[in-house]
Image (cartoon, rainbow, N blue to C red):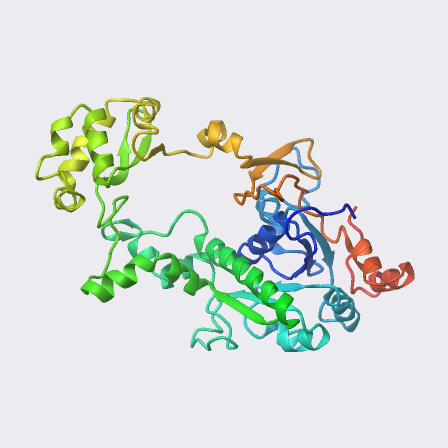
Length: 409
């Protein structure tokens, strides 16, 4: 095994997660240096089959979805329903600091591998769960048995109800119902690890996807409790800020957020209307909110006569603004190149190296500067079991007994 670097290089994470939320959480930890051991069922994480696949891929071992959230991990595939598979799994727990799973409530307990069972074996273990509606250990929701995916979490947590245009509630494009819970779970894991360092005792923690989305939508709660209002979809604007919106250009769109009065004054000068900076209908944010349609018309008339690049050239660095990128145009943005936010990884079965998103967490002293492609199913099983004290004969017996997946071809 290549020595790991990074802030978490002395942390081992046993990762039982599939799909998006759990794998994204553990990838954040892996990017920061943790040794993340992905324990998959014999058939593999179901995302392996979802693609998209490279045009010249001859293996179809995994596609872009799996690669994007499973880099920097090692893989072993075990049958946890078999005694031999559970024994092998428990051997990994002995050296683990963290376990992460996103099964439905009770699944791990029925396997005899729930938090209490694992904590008896490894008292310092931090056990994290990401579920749609949480775990009864921290708060027994009446929905705790319900399965959930991103769109459900976005709906229940309040995001769909305020997103989109008036009368058309819309889910957010990216899977924020998975991704934000994942990031919060990573934060919780780091806090629990710090506590375990002090006390020698681990703990159970969980993040409910619906809870995380509600936290993301924190504005709607105080708006309602303070004013009685029920926020609804408002398009790209903001109910309390103006201008704060997306505006059309000749060849695209730009975001402009000049709601603070000094930015508004600067914007007025840049678009050739300096007299509006002190006009009583526009001089303050409160006034501009009352006259938001007139403000939007003013900016739209100016921006729609120019290209996106021309608008950004005039406003960039003067008032908060930015181009509305699509997947193609952002690959040419100098910002993302300078920040190493597009990382190319080898793709098994393909001659290409293909791009995934890099890590947005930039540590100056322990930088995230190397990436390993996502693993083939069970690619690291032998190394992991040898590290856990198995010899080659026991590993062969595990395979012949069907508790361990065959070596990948």
